[in-house]
Image (cartoon, rainbow, N blue to C red):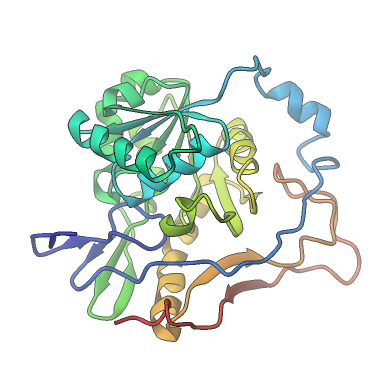
Length: 317
């Protein structure tokens, strides 16, 4: 890969994140440890029964889920497009330059020729016309880019996966946008859309590697319940992933900022970490909301960042 010019360089690998700014070299590529994620029952939730949830969602017509990715030619967007197409979605990969989009799509299809991936190149305006849209632009361009295609996004679920982070020397520093999070900034730019924050902690390397499952929990938050439901349903199709409803969009501030901690662990311990919430396997909890009261002895859930033992591939140069 040729050197990236400019005072700031965008990370080209790591946590499936769009537009991390860095004063130094990009962060280490990330690989989650292999493990089994327990299945989560889909009934007995705080938000209603499985039948009520199904009634709130659009009926399936047998057609593939169509998703547009705005700013999808970076590592995060390309990896997400690859994974979504592999689980049966039809993806439009958007970019400011349709020729750049064509190049990235060709690279994906060349890498996975036997997967029959349905990924189409196009401009951001074309991606915005799909029924479901993901913002994968650099964090500082997310709100303004969304506003530029707002007419196509009215009434749609729009997921944001960017984090406001900077790398200064050997430290990762979370930045707080004026509205508290990238997701909140996008929601302010799209008052008629249903914005959800999701996929902030997912590594691009693993997300785009179809030979391995996606390990870990995917935290989703939104002020619109139907947006959380819709994104969770898509995430749960990804092998190894577990979608969790993390409440309102105000929690995106903590979710986005915590990525700096995970990336710092990668550097400090020369390994790769994956986010996994423990304490949920013993409760009939649903991806769609908090579930019933926790049984005695499980009042709280611990948070762990599970790590793999370092090996030759995880030690930085």
